[in-house]
Image (cartoon, rainbow, N blue to C red; front, side, top):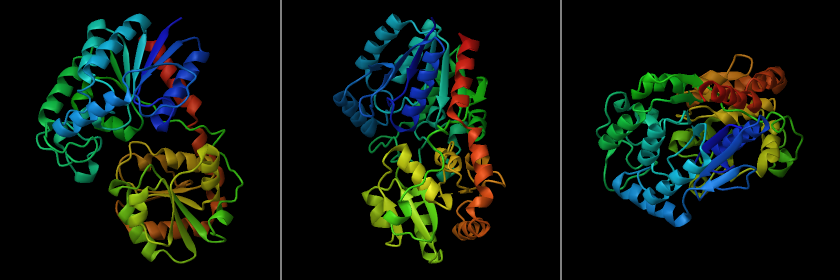
Length: 401
């Protein structure tokens, strides 16, 4: 029986945690022995054999080190060395890495070990951190230092925040040295856009496969609910946006501008807002903290006339496909990976930052009516069914081990 070790900051929670759980479950069903290593803060019940690399106190210490010395992924030394002994016991045939920037793991120790042991590694990139000296995204600041050498980070205070030192130059050099020294590394990206980024970075020497994030199309399906009654929306056209916090890069200020010019027969509703978001948003925007599970989220998608993303940085855009799976068209900005998900039959793409253009696109989509798009949206979403995506990983494991 071959053995698979999955590594991710979260265990069966959040987008990457659920993706890892799905991959592991499919691998189990196909005869693999599966383990998942994870951090301490983001943990949910799992069907997989799991190992917690550190505890909450360890993550706090790592976080403090990261915030002071720009050292994300360079703490947790003892914990990671302990983890290597566990890997020795597991003897994985394949190691599949996901997000490791989360104050739970020391990546220099891990990568040096994996290279010395010559273990085949798949690394799924969900953002750009592996190719920069600090940031996880660089589009909003139009920074291109990552192509050659990071020197002075314009996003030092953004995640993973550093409030004292700027060590992006040494971080970049260390990552380049460690990652490019790997001999059995296969990279996957969640979008063609992100693949293009990899091919312009120091990781260009490695083979890159695009494996889009998958959606559970059996859960995200048209669902009758009381969303319109519960929030007093009535017959208004419901414009829905979903995110894990509407910070600046997620377009919160563009939503504020849109709320001022959108006709009264339209209702903006944002899911995933925190207290800071709610202070910024005007009263005519419905701000919801979160949906209560996939079933309720599917009801929100189903009630909406259109899903709107005004994000400036997306390596995929999972909410877009979730909405389409419920038969709801989408409108997105023309940046990063978002346009890849839109076809003329499933929505519209507007110029980056063009709030007036977004308003006109909303009116165009709603004038045609949701029924005009629904069948094509559902069919398009089925191409992203999670089982199809996860099977691509299983096929890749067989290739390399």
